Image (cartoon, rainbow, N blue to C red):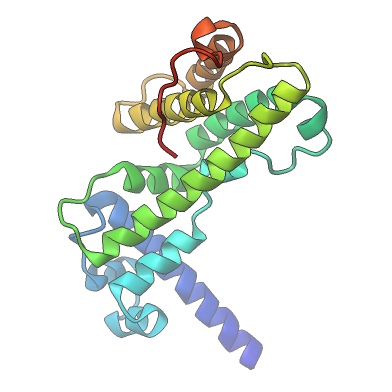
Length: 220
């Protein structure tokens, strides 16, 4: 009986979270009420409160459930991580672009992240906190791959790694944001593959990417 009850609680919780994702995606984080989430989930307002206490608690649970693209970069890379780090960086990003193209939940999560909140309220800070956390992890994993690629002589030994990292991160997430906020006519899988190839060529061959030139301060 306890097992069945726990399964029901878990099912209800996931239904509420799925409803919250849809509501926040459509209306933004700031405006919707818990009642709108409850209505879409097919539960009472009290059920939402019982599970999450408040809108802030619901946002926290939803953001903790998010898996962001940058956090997937080195997952399941295996031995290729050390043998062919530059190839791993490329293939993982191509996979990420293809996954975004066919994963509606990722699209909704990313649109919520890129959607500006008109009011500075407590609830929206959870999204920004999660975005910053995902960005930090993504930068760490990309930095690891770039450093390994330099060690394996796949990239120049005098490469300005910090600048290369920022160029890759900004360029690749820029194309995701543009695609999400546009009409999505283009195939982001194909478009993203061209972007990563162009950026890798720039990092490998552009003299402006070398250390010893005037340093450009970058943000971390």
